[in-house]
Image (cartoon, rainbow, N blue to C red):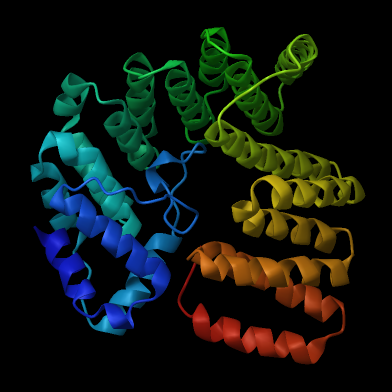
Length: 377
């Protein structure tokens, strides 16, 4: 297997590999061997094929290219990886796709293999395989991705899995196809799906609210009034639920997921405020978000800091922007998020220049030009 050879060749020189990438290689080696060791998934070892926004990250491929060049090993081509994924046991498909994207960033290989094995995947009815396939396919073949997510909702292991699959179907219809009526249909289907606990109801409403907010941004027709009305209604329902059952109890995992999503909603809401020119309000909202993230989900501070830094920059608070963005750049570096670091660095340079800290700006610019030479969005 091409991928196995690549992983083994890199691990043979593991003393040259950075810690973040070494952790991903060891995870891949464990996956290939069929062992089920308990690797703790963190922001440095993320579920790249489980993104709620159905996005592809460019950082994994950049990290892989950097490490492969450092060791002198060639990354397998998309064609090679497609062959590996098309030939593996269907029971191992999801795990191997997970490892391939983590270590190479090659979403196209997963997309190709998923389409090659579409009939097998549908017959197998494995929820994770269907969701991973949909995520990889969403960019080149969004309508196929919608099918995978919709079918995954029917094969879900529990109520929340079904809801999350429907969320992905809605996000794909909205962001890739710009099909607002289809998006609304998926959101309503999501909201009508029953759940067993108040914690799940709260999470369901949060997911729907964020989708409605994106609809308000993207669809400027009169239909937006209906979206706003739905969102207000959902919030009223949520508030009533909280009042009725103040003793909502849930696992640490659910709390962590909620904390992460709350931060993403805060960032999206701040974007709405900025679109309206309310930069001061966006800064205030994101400053509160920083306190909450630091307290409840500190592993997601890089994104929260970058968002707050950008809002400060747009509001003319350049010194505050520098403070937040410098921290974000350092933290992005620690989790291998190259594109996040690149964007934050660009705004940091401009903030330093606006603050008349020209010597620092020149130093950061020189490092930026060296580190990100040839890297594009």
